[in-house]
Length: 325
Image (cartoon, rainbow, N blue to C red; front, top):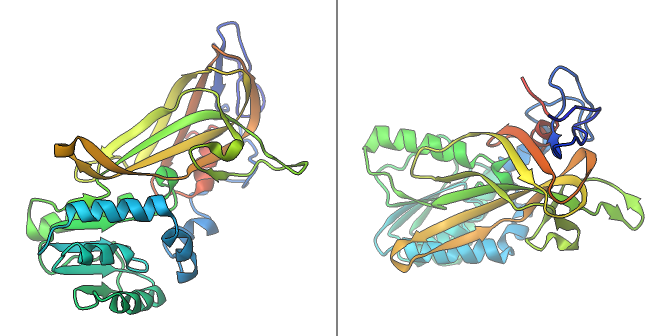
């Protein structure tokens, strides 16, 4: 058994078992905030994304290209479509271009909804796409629809309200129209976590800050163990909204374990007849640990964290340090 020391990591013992957790009875400091509050200023951005943030999303080719292909495959001429959290309306445009007879594009922020109306009209689909300035948590179409598009997504499903919005829509849709449910884009999600060694040196300045990196790790992230799946689900089925992970990972590479890498794959469309899916691999989230640990190949590290979908990034980061009840 591992014996705890100060911080969030247990010291090495003869059975080479190590643990990422602190004694639950002891308060411990954290490098971001003093308490494990569920909300912070940053978390609000996931619900209110102003127009000047949309450039980055519109130019993110894996995201835009993936949705364009998935919508082109699943939306057929004459279908009716809802987009929850429409932003600039680009996904609704793809649906209209694929032949949708009617699209409801739901956007909560008034100035973004106004911009979406202008963009959709300029792109020649304003007659088939109705922009609804309403909260996606409350919206229902006036009639049954064939496809629901919802991209309120953040790595690890923190910050944004994808799961809550789709769960609310499903419950209210079934109550009003009965089954079946429409098809969802994305159709499924895969979440994984991985122990890593990360370079936090910036021109000689050491700063262990959260990072968003592509699959290569931007040259700063070295994998210490294989990724471990902690959630796989389809949006049309029941899915978890709380993630509680207690996983033992075998270290494959000797180094300094100083961060966890959170990996999110969105299956935008599952094409069973073609035996393939259209995927969007989001940028990985690298969360620093408060207390790094030297590990050797063959060591077993116990990874523990918990969070609710839509929680702030800070709440996730604090939970890694053993924020137990």
